[in-house]
Image 1 (cartoon, one colour):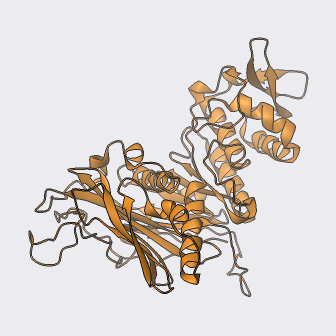
Image 2 (image 1 turned 135 degrees about the horizontal axis):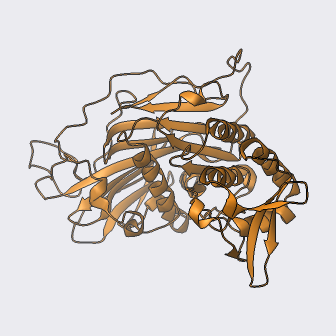
Image 3 (image 1 turned 90 degrees about the vertical axis):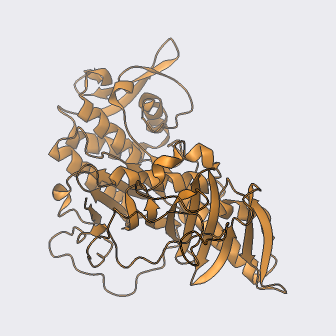
Length: 439
């Protein structure tokens, strides 16, 4: 079902020159004690992000009766409290979400922040995730008295533990480091970190215990997400510790199950080496993946062929892959009359359509994603991030792909966040949430 729309409100001013500092102001400018973490202020509204009414089919009304509890871990909201061109921006995410707006409204920025959170949740170091951290600092943000500037991002993950919020404050200058992190559930702070001594490469962490001692304190590295490290540090002996572990694991599982996809037709035309059969973000090894999936999952492959019939020129009886004597594999469209068309002869739009359809109809076992293998499939979902979703596609192709995404989203195992310039064509597709971004 589509996600209900949030009330609209005027966007906040984006030209502020207030400092984006990793310190929490407690008095006049310049009188800021070092090392206090700044936390995003509660948004007064959805800010610059105005969710439109979710697209629905004719006669589709609200669901009747209580909805069953969805225990699958998934990200339902991304917050950019202060990140690049966004301030106090909240992005609600449904099973299929389309971020729409003209160039410069921050669609790609929102996807970049989501992917960054996903990589941090997977245990990546801060420097690996943010190659150019200064570009993430709001343009007009001034340094504080200590010369520090930074940015703040966060998200909400829903699942068996209910909504769990994560907020992260990152210092970009003069040194890249996490200076504050907060994990909360049901209004209870389960984990909180803060930079107490700028001379040390650690933050002071405190997590909920609810035993003989209400909290446990210990240092954590300032270049890793503390939430991702908790399963290695918390014993789980008390109810409080088990609650912390459950919330942290739900957040990590939701974040790790992300696949950022941007098919590159120029890399998909020729034969590719036979390898792991896991699709790369650029989809250049599509032929190798087709060679694997056609043999391993006949039902999904048949669905893929049905989608290709709706978006490729000419008849399509099958999509096949052929091994070559040099150890490479090439993919071809079987036309059904004994003739096969190599992918090299397809247009860029057809190749992007084919690749995106394959992504939406597969899963973490096929895509090159760092999914938590120790978690059963029934407890997690895969989220596909697709910037420029409709690039090179004709109206029929983009509509069929979005309907395919909606069908997979209803099943609960694949979610999609897509960015487009104009989403008017998405109106009427059931299960799609459109979020309009304004300059």
